[in-house]
Image (cartoon, rainbow, N blue to C red; front, side):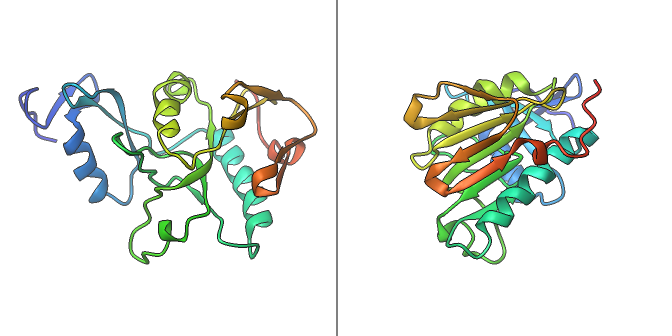
Length: 204
């Protein structure tokens, strides 16, 4: 990418791209093969950092896949709710973000056959990675909370068997699971911890 003055849309710095909010949104609208996050967003200046999130560790990929399969199996054919992997979620007044997994029950989110942009997330799952854990717990979490439909946030550890669940009804206080199952009552879902960690190499 061509280097620009920091007061223009983009500037390269230490392997990341400093950019404006508008430049980020233009980038993701025209990009289908890679996934980007807009970190350190400053609403006052409209500036932040674009980070390419494409690719993951084997454990991250296995956990995402196992979670998706459990949710997909239970939601399939049961109503309007759909589960998606690595799709942009749009929050009011915030940069779009890409969760590992998102559940929406709004048919308008997937009615367009050419473009998938989730505006009504209900459940979001992130598999924690050392490089992005702080972002997932803070800035990204706060963005998701801006959505009125957002109800449940699940953080999955990839170095140990541990899952954190945050719900709006419990004021976003964490519940920690290391065995058994997680019940998501409002969606009539149950996540089995053993199945979630099947074939996952937990070695650091």
